[in-house]
Length: 497
Image 1 (tube, rainbow, N blue to C red):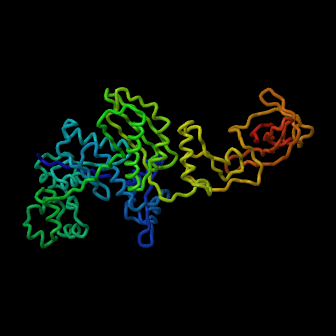
Image 2 (image 1 turned 90 degrees about the vertical axis):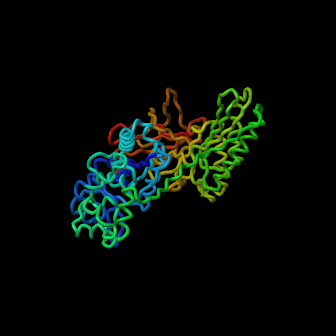
Image 3 (image 1 turned 45 degrees about the horizontal axis):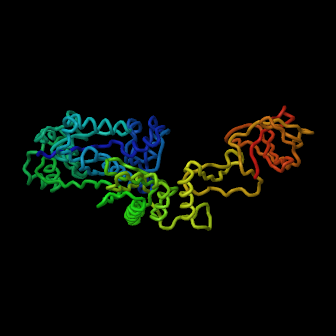
């Protein structure tokens, strides 16, 4: 069988990836830059920046001279290789053999694969259109060798699918740079007037070796197929999945529990070796009659404690109906995260952070994760903005909870209007009407004035009162605006314990 290779060239790899994450940048000219020799040098630029003559290797100061409005972002070292690896893993849906070609390309060994898409042309178009739809600019070509496919993808002007044994004809009109030569070699070839591969492809090898060294003959041979070029495919990620076949069908609850414990121990051993923990886990029980029973758990943060995970599964195991028996158990962790051996304590608590997280997981398993909420303080005076809900147990507060002010335990998400009676304009109310009921006030404390945060929104201040009714219930009320500026409005904003 003829070997066939596909080369993919991402023209703006890291810039496109940034635009994919931030769609608002797609219509903006921007570059990625990093320090180099005491100055900021452009490492990547998007299509709009290149159209204005701003290219990689240029100093950021020169780029701003050409385009003062150019946006500059930090370039992360090693980001291109990580992106290519992820893209190569994604391309394994088209072929099992996909390799990265740093800094901006991929190689795919597509031998025997293209017929599944109806031929090489539809195969190539499907890959290119799918990746382009995700926001990447690319060119791709197919040939008998990686070298020829690489050359045509970057410098070809006609067909991107080179017929078998036709790589020589495809290379003839291409420039020497299409052979993946070093810049020093290309400069010497340019001085000698070699502008196309066809000008030197038939020259004696001894002459080419004398002038340009062995690298030219090696690259030329790799493109023509006379020299072997190794390919190192990326290894597909192994799913976090364990299976346990049964010699005899399992029909009892103790048998299901034993099988689950064994699977959890095996899976957690692998997670420990790789420094990871799971966030979701699914147990599937394959019955003799062909049906599949399934239960799932989730954790608030990554865990690899088999005992804790079993306790999360335990209340759900009775829902598994074995019928005539279960012949295969499968345990899979679809969501896995890195896990540090020593994690920071939750909420700066001196207690055991892991124990707190596991307690919350057990509560979530019984009541539903949507019924458990965590709040952190924010640096805002306006009460509605002073707290935020977070889902991660690892997120740490940026400021401490304020303890110098009296605040209600229950804060309404939106203040609700009330009617009040006050003896004098600046006095606390004697009673207030809320939801059609009158609440006589026995005592009050206040006012506490809270101004609008002018850098966020403008508006009148609030004067807050902590009031207590005749039954001992306490409320947080506020008056919006001042009497000298008109008739202010009153609102109920919270309840004290």
